[in-house]
Length: 473
Image 1 (cartoon, rainbow, N blue to C red):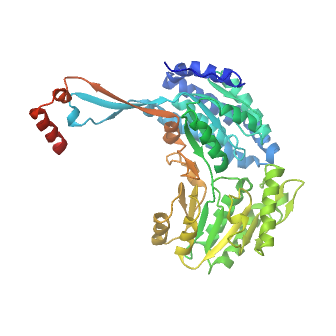
Image 2: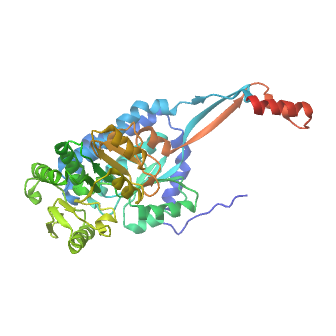
Image 3: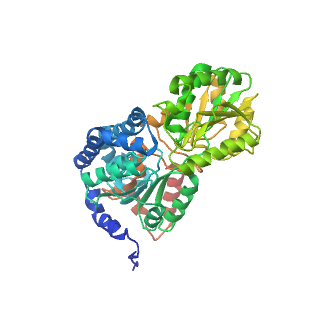
């Protein structure tokens, strides 16, 4: 008899138990019932709470309203639309072939919900990275506990109101608090954990999940390299990299972390990059309504220390470098001539600082990239198909975008996620639905099967049948 473990000392045990008791009812909900829930979330995000969401994110770190629409509202709404379009087909019995050796039977698999799920989301895209996975979890038929970041309290408060208005806590609940709250939640035997954050915390989550053999999706980060070769359109590359790097003040897991550019075009690229930054944010980004801030003092200090480390190592500040602690403001900054030991080249930056390295031969860039952990994204700017294929074939990354950056995240037909240090598992579209589902295989015997001819006792005839089966089937 299996012993049932309880957690009376854990303040979230009662909530967890409510969802555990309710998971089969939710798991057996119909396609229409799940669509109704998704529509309710869509209405709340797109209409009812939209202005409050935008104001909350502005209050948390001066996120521009338009940028919130593009990077928070739109991704959630489009995720819901995609799930609504395809959910009926995802929930159908998925028929597969049955080998001749199992004649008389049929086979299929079905997606069944994993059960009680925990979603721990980060501060950089609080709404998107909380409600995005929630859409997949609801579509798959799970109960869910959400734990958003404590670093963006205003938007966490708005999300808590939305969840409380739309759901009973025995189905979806949101809990707020410091890191101790996450630590307590991770002690519970969830059926699945979806975590978005740093590789360091991802290891802690995975270790906790292992205690209960809980499956995990880890959306992590890392140092996503960007390569610009001599054939690239310099103006277009500069414009897109500037947008991808400094959107959300560089606080994006898939932003270009560092740049590899051919030595012959570096000067022209930096000149064009300055022009693009001025067109985006004027010559004083601190006055721009399109440029947000670092989320808090801790992360501001961390980034300033990176800049100071670069200065100490005699690196060249090509663009920017100005800071203001009163607003956690860091000017869009480009730094080159960094030695390999520079902290900017060792840690994921997660801020508005772009290190630039040059190369003479593409093998130099590829060798350097492969000396690091596998990145979440790798970007290539080139018109040379042979070079593009060389880079893709000889590197590894969670995703790649050619002649653009960041936008691969927005295609729900593509799996999003990393590999090893940059993550485990995928999200978006059917890939997110699958993360929150178990593919349950079913084989049904209709008539007497050939396997029954091989039941003991064994004899020479049965051995011949086995030999023929191995050879031909």
